[in-house]
Image (tube, rainbow, N blue to C red; front, side, top):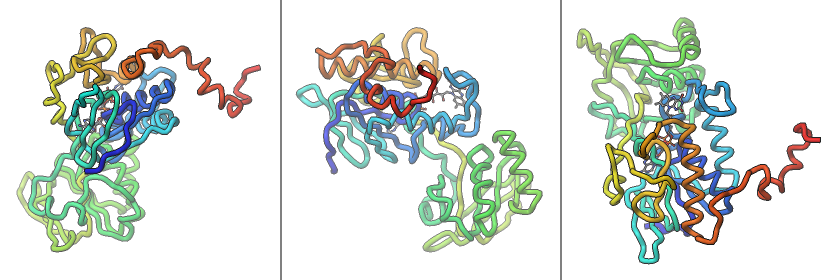
Length: 347
Ligand SMILES: Cc1cc2nc3c(=O)[nH]c(=O)nc-3n(C[C@H](O)[C@H](O)[C@H](O)COP(=O)(O)OP(=O)(O)OC[C@H]3O[C@@H](n4cnc5c(N)ncnc54)[C@H](O)[C@@H]3O)c2cc1C
C-alpha cells in the first residue's frame, strides 16, 4: 500500500473544524494533511445543506453554507495543506517513537500528531435499495455529480427531494436531453429560492416532475439503459429509457472504525480535556465529534476547539514551541503579504 511522506499534523475530516485546523497549522508553521471520505471539502456544509443560510458565524450576518465552505477552503489551504479526498480513515497505528500512521482505504500516512475533526463520522451516500444500483454504480448510476458536462445530451433520472436533488436538477436542465425528477413524497426540503426556480423549470417543460414515486429497478448491461419506477400509493409501474440515474438522497454519517481506536468515548463522541487532547497522547479531537462538559455542536465552537487542538498539538510535537500563537495581526507569516492588501483603509 502507498506510504506517503510524514506530516506534522494529520487532520481527519475536512469539515469547517478540520479546515480551520489546517489553517491554524499553517499559521503555526507546521505541515498538515486533511483526509476526508467525501469527494468535496466542507463536511456537513457542502454534503447536507449547501443552500441554507447560516446566521451564527462571527463576521457573517448571513452566509450560504456553500459560500462559507468555499471561504474556509480558501483560508484553510492557503499554507499548502495536502488534501486527500474520497479516502476513509480506517486505522490509527501508534509507532514506538510516539508518532502515528493513519491508514485509509487507499494509503498509509505517517504523522507526528493527529487531530480528529470527523463530525458525526464518515459520510457515506444513502443508496437506492433496488436491483441494478450496485451493479451499475459508476456506469450511469451515481450519487454525486463529478462533472455536469457528463450529462450533456443525456436522458437523466434524478431521485431526491432535498437541496442537492433540486440544485442539480436546475444545473442540468439545459444540459440534459430529457430530465425527470422523482421524489417519494409531495413535499420538498430544498431552499425556497431554489424551489421557485425548480417550479419555473417544471412549468416551462424543462423538467418532468413525478412525486410519490420510487425506483423499483435500474436496467442495463454495460451501462444504464432504463429504469422502472413505481407509484408508492398505487404500486403502478412505469418504465423510462434513460442513460443516467442520479440518486441524490443524502448522506449518512457513521463513526465506523473510529470507535475501535482505543479512544475514550461517550455516547458516540470522543472525550477530550481542556487542551482537546484525547486519552491517547498526540491524538487531539475537535468539532462535532468531541464531548466535554458544556459542549455545544456549533461551527463557532468547532473553530475555537480547532485552534486549541492545533496549538497544543504543536506543543506536543515540539515541547519547546510556545502554546500561545500570538495575534495574527502581528504574525510574520501574514505581514509578508500585507502590501497585497494596500488600500484596505490603513493609513
Ligand atoms: C441542516 C443543518 C443545519 C445546520 N445549521 C447550523 C448553523 O446554522 N450554525 C451552526 O453553527 N451549525 C449548524 N449546523 C451544525 C454544523 O454543520 C456542524 O456543527 C459542523 O458541520 C461540524 O463541523 P465538523 O467539521 O466538526 O464536522 P463535519 O462538518 O461533520 O465534518 C466532518 C468530516 O469528517 C469526515 N470524516 C468523518 N470520519 C471520517 C473518516 N473515518 N475518514 C475520512 N473522513 C471522515 C466526514 O466525511 C466529514 O466531511 C447545522 C447542521 C445541519 C445538519
